[in-house]
Length: 109
Length: 116
Image (cartoon, rainbow over all chains, first blue to last red; front, side, top):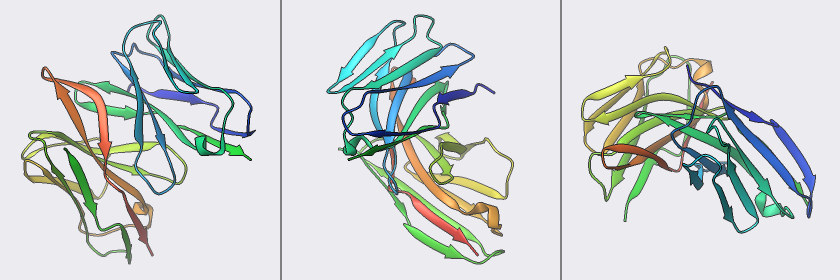
């Protein structure tokens, strides 16, 4: 079974702080997706990374794909309460789609 | 544009009763379809996925089953619910490009099941 690990599991920070969450796998990703999920709703796609070393920015969010394509990080600058949610990384293996356990982020005003 | 709907949104069922959750997709053809279950605040557990009509792959041994009677319809069922079946169930479809799964999933609104 190709598992995904995410850390930290829980994170509670003050508004305005920076944070980084991580996603790791023992196997190489062909591509990796980051999703955010708010309570009671389905996850929403944030970004797809494909190339080793790739960096993508989405406003205050910066996504990095490891050179070996086995890990990824999500950095949020100046976190806001609206960033609160469950951040999930995901990989595909043929037609099977596997999610990591998620990082639950709480940004306190 | 593509849309996905699942229902019911909320369900409270007694132990031993049957279950049927339905998911339909519009605006696309031959999508991959998925059923996930999620415990509170945690990641998504893949239950079933389907690459075509009548084609179901099961990921976790359980008392649940899935069917795909039509191209854009995916149904999750149980003959007898257990307490452990309680959770948030999500249906999703994925995008294909060039015959490959892009990993871009679009989710339904979710169905919260409570088994008492």
